[in-house]
Image (cartoon, one colour):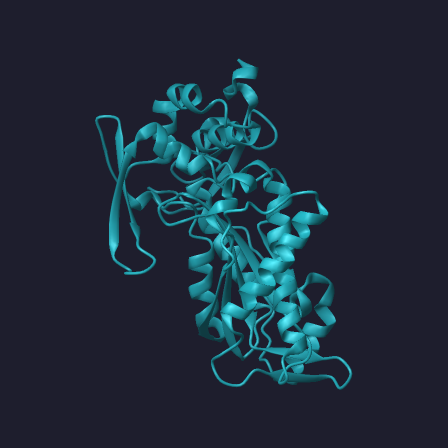
Amino acid sequence: MIRLAQLLRQYQEPLIQQYATKMQPRHYQAMQAIMDCHTPACGEMSYVCTSCGQLETLCHSCGHRSCPACQHQTNNQWLDRQRQKLLPVEYYMVTFTLPAQLRAFIWHHQAWAFNALFSAAAQTLTTFAKHDSRLGGIPGMTGVLHTHSRRMEFHPHVHFVVPGGVFNPQHSLWKPKPGKYLFNGRAMAKVFRAKFTEAMSRQGFRIPEHAPPQWVVQCQHVGRGEPALTYLARYLYRGVIREENILRHENGEITFQYQDNQTRQWKKRTETAVKFLWLVLQHVLPKGFRRTRDYGFLHGNSGQILQRLQLILRVAFFPSEPETTVSRHCPCCQTVMRLIRFIRPRKTGVGRQAASPAGR
């Protein structure tokens, strides 16, 4: 398998030379973290077998959210949190996409634009739930930001996972949305556009004249209960690219595969190694930005409301089991090994500034 860390080590210098004007500190930090992942730079743990004396040393992972070797843990953590909020109702995924004509503006104002995208999308869903004749309440929803298309181009959009119903606080009732239809996508797109452009206007920005009047909002029924969440967890936390999809590295070029949105057929794309690495690094989010956000009765401050809903809907509640320490077993005799040495990472925080031109 072709590893992203290996490619970064090989093409680090030409990558910096070609894209130095676009790269920011967070890109250098992500690049260094990926290269350091599972190496002594991230720290080490040494074990000894109390039976046969076998020694074994393991290196820590970097924990950076852009590292493909660290995404599996993030996926499981998200899924465990969502299981505790699970309701036995229909679920929907609503996707809000910003037009291509805004992407250059968004690239230069990422922190503000991504926050505005979350806010406009959440307000749109809340507005439709309040004015729906069968609902008339505040929904619960979980939003996840994506900045990439399947071809790894810069393509900011946000997915919202929405249970099909609302909570009526006056009568302590759950009001479900019957059938497998939530809201009209075209109608939501108009409201979403109005709310985002209003946010831009308040900030002193203007929509480009060539921006299309019709924006895109897709609303899809995704099933019921835990199977839907399991599917969504795989989809939402797939990362920019899986290393399994990097097919070839020949003559300074990288070929990777992706699944086409429309046809669902697998296609291939070949780029120079330097451009491929920039396609990956350009999606590193601003430092401290929250990629996943909860709203309504799924918000962290609405725990009592969620518990009441679970009682109303007769949810079989299974508390999560406490985490237990996993013992390391000897590869030779399977005896439990003893930790004898723990070395911290060489640098605190994620990544090291030494990779940037300013630090060299």
